[in-house]
Length: 309
Image 1 (tube, rainbow, N blue to C red):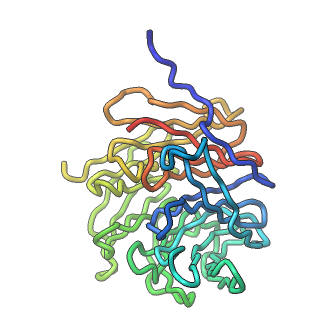
Image 2: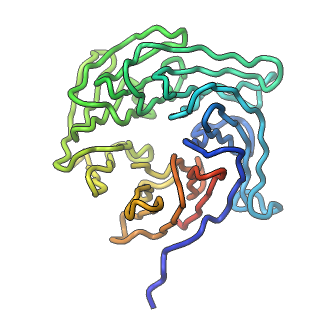
Image 3: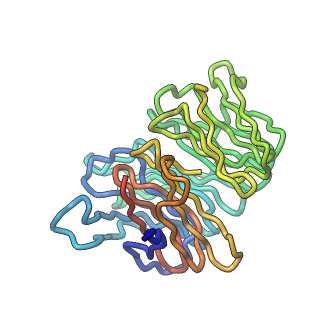
């Protein structure tokens, strides 16, 4: 008998508002728990969660809100800085957001008295993705509907500016060779830039459009995946979100019936999804740093799905 892959979320966390975006901290922060941030209509919440898959004395999920940051406008994107540390004195929480007002906000907090943010302005249309430099965290890359990819330092100055041929949808930094940056455009073009030479060194092209999202597999950077048209497309450069722990797992969200979001986890060894979840309203998608576990934002909820590797 064929097993039905449809499952409800394994864990949920109630929230005060609709969740527009959710992001696990992808970096080691010096604590056994997992930092997670989610954004609503005018705030960002930073919390800590631990799952029973990590700690045997926990039943289900243990969640604690660490700080709520006033944002003043809808949060569209969140990116964590590798400078975030919970084992330092005082602790350091650092992340940036993209917002409906086309601005980037850089937040820094010690979870006590210091709560600062800086506004980075320059984009003239909606910002679709942003990411920190994965090593030092001293630069931020962003892409926008204004047909640009921009690199910023933490003072808000632009250090590089690439003109695109269509809206920029996704941007990823190479985890090791940090002079390499991947930029995906809505017209189906994915370019890899050399930031030292400030020029493109490789490009991929999807025949399907529009391209809505692309992601570099951080476990095997020869693999790139993208959602374009109605398809998930995978390139192997040697010949949209990947799991952080396996080069064979990736997850997608979509609206197949236009009535509800559908969340799917795929494995490259299987032709069909290995897990399907249905969400009344869903947005945002983020993988846990060490577990085969995904977070999705919903209506006043965070939802978590767990699968096998």
